[in-house]
Image (cartoon, rainbow, N blue to C red; front, side, top):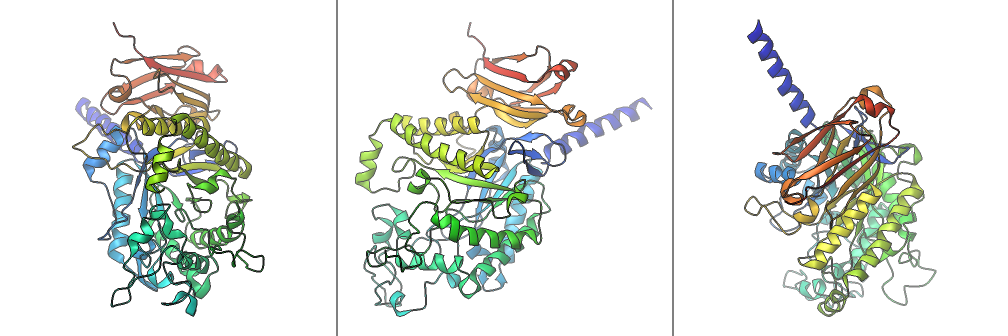
Length: 527
């Protein structure tokens, strides 16, 4: 009988560990605007990486088991996984089942590994139809069917960026003139054809937007079964639309004359886009969070507030929708500027970049508060190496701690042969994975290595009894060890796993009397 009980106890232990490692479906707490586990009521904060394949041959980028293990060793618990509509729908109504299965398999693997995922329909330069582009299928990315946009027309691709040059088959061959323009590869957006193609989508010209909705509906129907799907990011950095690119177009009689003005594209084009996609997704999945971005993302328009007055589902969906946003310090973070402009901006002080980024982050925080919803920084960084890059990452992640917003860093590929990439010193910072209470303040001082957390313990008896989880890396942050303090004293029963760098705790009876609990980690003094 004794051996039988021992076997049962061991089985229960492993079952409990397996259940604990499987993510719980997340929603948004409407009062705090923070992410919460739908089943348990524990609060969640997310730190992770962006993953995307934008090169040829086209395939769905994934992580190996070794890369996922490294991801978790760095304390990261979410992947923003880019995929492409043009790879899913090969021709109108015809879907690439093999590619879709790759998507499903990767989400399933992440689920089994205890890692959340944001599904990002990633576009850059709109479509493979345009130089270096990806995202929208070529058959739905044509500009208007008029002579202006055809070969020899005054708006033929890639005008006005460059005069088109063609091979004998009629393909544009001077893409280097486009991708090497004033704003680097992003110069490709300011062509007549790209703007017209984007506007056709927003206007549902020829049923394009409906096809986009059916694409998202298909993806949602395949992925809604996985509790680790944190959300669907509807469209990466959507272009403004058919913006005027010449003086003769910049007149009030042009219905799109004011799209360059801050917030106008959000109020018009983005609103139409997101509300339509929301409707299609909600027909098959009414639970998963929808992430939506302001127009363009991560550029000069972030110097202004977004034009959204509500999310695509209206205020009634604020527990299932969130504003996602990107912040880059132009010329330093993204290398989008010309060589000359890069040199000028890169020689500015780190403080200047911090000042700019601080302004941009505060804009997005204000937008989130005004909309009464959650926020998520789904792209930042890409700053190269050196002290400027380190400062940009530290500044951004500290700012997100202040906001209690999640983030996914662009761009780092886990490499089992390189356990200490430059960025990890900044990215593998202490933070809450799951908390049996409402986080009020969270901060990690990158100079002193002091981590502090203030939270209100849950008033729900069941949630109050659950385990909290905080990532604390001895390897990356506390090589000499660390010490902990708590107020009230003895309110938390702590354990630490040196193999996973996870700090666990449960509340003691002393915590029941506390209105707030303060928890601090600091480096152990050297002898």
